[in-house]
Image (cartoon, rainbow, N blue to C red; front, side, top):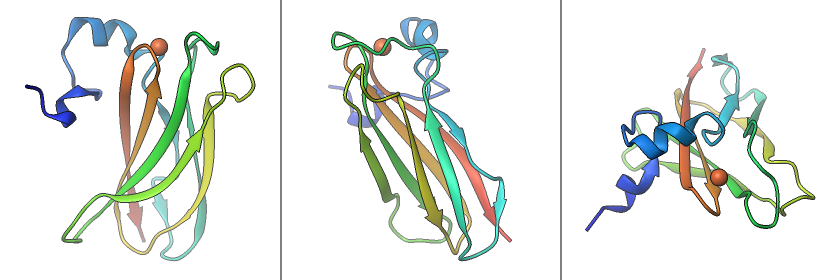
Length: 124
Ligand SMILES: [Fe+2]
C-alpha cells in the first residue's frame, strides 16, 4: 500500500508516465528569493500548456510553507478552487513571513493526480 506522500508527483519522481507529463503539470512558482521580515510579497502559481476543459483540467492549487525551525510543518497558507474553462489555471496570493523556509505548491489535475513544486524563501 502506497503512502499518500508517494502519490504526489514531485520534480524528483522517476516514474516514466509522470516524467512524460511533468512539463505541463508541474506548478510553476513565481516568488522572490529574498524578502524582508514582515514585508508583504506576492506569490504566483501557474500551470503552463495544460488543457482547461470540463473533462480535463487542474481543479485546485494549494500553497504550504515549511518554516525553518518550527517543530511541526508544513503550515497551510492558501487554496484556490478552479472552475474549468472559466478560471485560468493559476493563483496569486500575498504573503507575509517572519522566518525563512520553503514554499510548496500543490496542484490537482482531475486525470493525472497531484503535482508539487517548491521554492526557497530567505528572510533577510
Ligand atoms: Fe492533466
